[in-house]
Image (tube, rainbow, N blue to C red; front, side, top):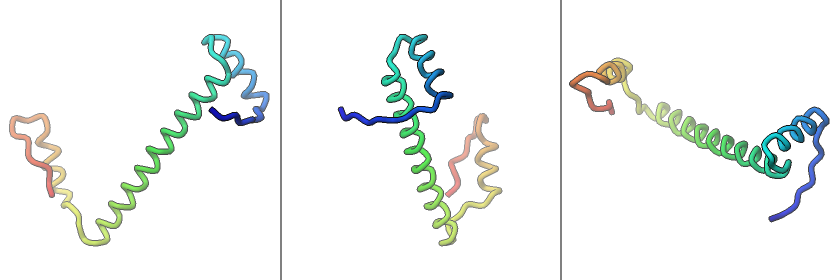
Length: 87
């Protein structure tokens, strides 16, 4: 494990100390958890952005599905005759 030093503003430090005390956890633990959650969210956002770029390229190359076909598929959900996703 490596050591990284950070400076916390007073408006972060005091609530962090209170939370650490309340949860009986160290500030270090809480900071690590917060960073893990932030990195996971960033990874998800990166993945979504990549998917968006891929979808835009697909549209540019003429690959799309008609709105009516999508609506018909979605409207079949919950019925006894669910349709296959449009292609």
